Image 1: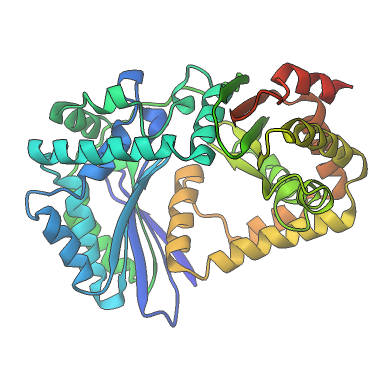
Image 2: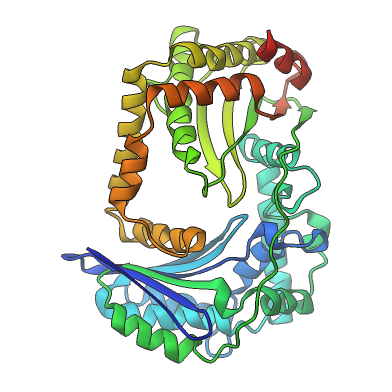
Length: 420
């Protein structure tokens, strides 16, 4: 399998990887315009725009967009994150040109029909309402807000209802004009693809676009803080975030190995101690997430009202203990889980196309898998213990609690336990 990468004169980037033996391909456009690129009055517009891309273009109605891909047995979708918006499809190899034409059409030629805007506004408001009814969704929005208070990175991707209710056709067009330039776009494809053909089609579809520099997002500052809402629910939801490395920092590999060993699977410390030994919860996990300039290690659990205090205390104790006695065997197991998860995932052309796009976005190039594996393997037990000590004792923290949480400790009380 060979990765090829090119760039048009206007800055539009193309990256692909041919995967021999496959009869299908994944292809998409990744735009470096997500939640953190919005001004406060625009909060939620990147996600709204993603929805509107499927509601009609100058050449196709909403139904024709869906039919074009589904008539050949493929599927098309999109998502918005805090740093990118992606539009992608999965089709058989003979339909790659069709998929690229449809994706290019919805990115370049949305009509923003006022009637469709109102229909989709209702859909998104329902999506926001559904999120508020899902405790283990809303708690992570609150945790993000406390981690990056009063910053674009701390705002919800869906946006508040009052903003979404007010967006106009001009607002959508203005965001596209500002953020959807060729230098903000990456065409990524994997599977049964021909790079030279992709280049030819990309030149025809995107070569006419005039370069324009996108706005540089505000640098993130991990502020920390606490959000707590008492509500009559079956479970108390507990989420703790700690400042961690961003994805351009090689320490991200240590952070990921640490979070895997702490709470990344059934053999992890938190799962074994909190669930298996003490029976305090059904779900508990730790994960390391990253952005361009910052990151968070997050611990989440759901438990009963009378056990949330004990669960929080044990979580802090396990974090402190990891700094003292994290074993070589645990580190080796976490490394193996990371590598296996990455390599197994890359057997999917969709996952591989996603990886290619994200690496080009981060680095401007695609580091080899061998380089990535080598960086994972280079993380030793002492590295993980040192990182665990930082997490347990020094890293700024944010806390979110939702449900019957009157018995849960405050962030200040957890900080005291960390320092004890």
